[in-house]
Length: 79
Image (cartoon, rainbow, N blue to C red; front, side):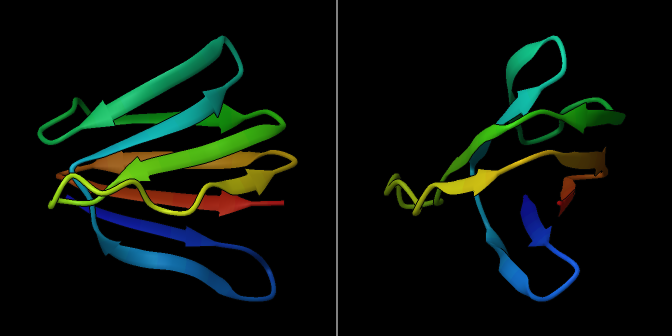
């Protein structure tokens, strides 16, 4: 699945991942391949992800944002 993390200033990450963990309003949640479509707000915390080879990506700290999951594309816009 493709993960895109953007801010107003820059593209922080864009690439293939096997899992992404996000700090949601109701608690942290994990998105895996073929996840149901969803839109959620994010709270302060860290976004972590696993690359297809099993390696952990560099965590990205966020103050908040929104995430859209649709058809194996996870689009994150952070503050």
